[in-house]
Amino acid sequence: MKRGVHDIGGLPNNQIDQSEHDYALWEKRIDALLVLLASEKQIMRVDELRRGIESLDIDAYNELSYYERWIASIAKILVEKDVITSTELEARMAEISTRKTTS
Amino acid sequence: MKPIFKPGASVIVSNREVDGHKRTPTYIRGKSGVIERFCGSFRNPESLAYGGDGLPRQPLYRVRFLQSHVWPEYQGSFTDTVDIEIYQHWLEPVS
Image 1: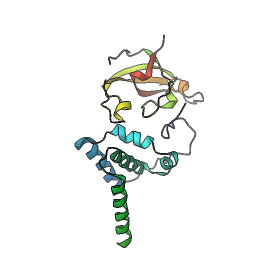
Image 2: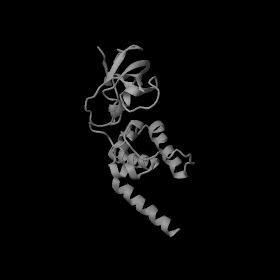
Image 3: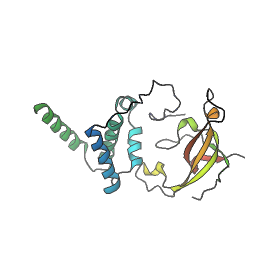
Image 4: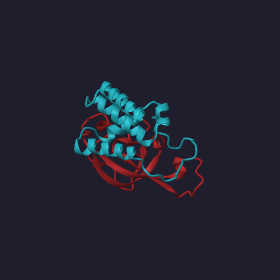
């Protein structure tokens, strides 16, 4: 049976880190972004978010943190729906990375 | 879709191969359990995940399984159970 990268219930794995931690501001922003896109704007559904996460390749899935998976999926779905283009996204990310290094 | 299972009915989770998004984890497929309750009918996530309208709504059930049945090497009590919410189109009646 073909399992998705996320469908790991019952498989052997390392110990789960159960320690509590505060959310970073960027994580809260990603959560807020999804709420706006799903509820207020009705641009994407949480089911699409999940599908986007599940379709990450296995290395990306295992390497990314929880909210990094979310934003990777949100970006993918918004490009898919022509809300943004990948060129726009790349240009904006390049612009922001410049801003970070010069500040 | 109308709900066809009543609480207490025995069901088996379908083992069929379905590509793409689904809410039925691999570890529970092919396992048998008992309908614990009917949770209501909801738009089908397998359609919503691809921008579809999710209609017709699918009945959703909470299904109860014995842990010792789900995990052959389970060390806990034989009476321990796990409840999983599963859509009707993933369930087959036990004759």
